[in-house]
Length: 163
Image (cartoon, rainbow, N blue to C red; front, side):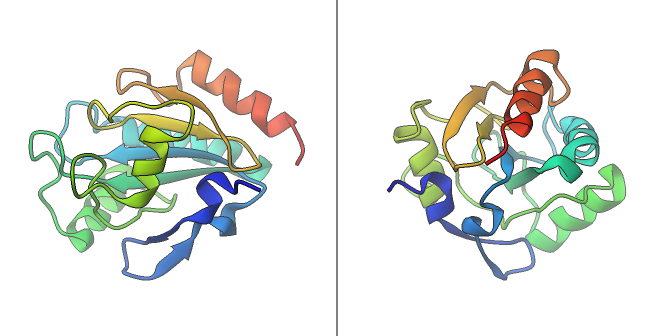
């Protein structure tokens, strides 16, 4: 059986390994982030979404990446400090990674080539919505805010589907 995103183990911002299977049964919003981007204020909306729906099974997973305009120049500790102090982020921050090109991390290779929502990441804050079984069910462009009605509606629908 295809375990989808659950088959990957990724490095967290603190350097520890996190198997994504730990999120099995949850609804995931996977986002590539950056600290110096015009879309960086979306951290606020991501945190709002996480706070509102985490008790119902939503997890927001942030993957900082420096692939676009060098807008994530910091180290993992600097990124964590920025996200915590400026946006009070409490959802999981993963280690800085590459989301496109020859050094693309395996999760993003999967997301952009085998998820059914294929195509290169176009900019910071692309979002993949994953159902409770680990299957990608939607993809949103950077311009779609985390609190946009169409995204929230889809999150709520997935949360209502019990495993």
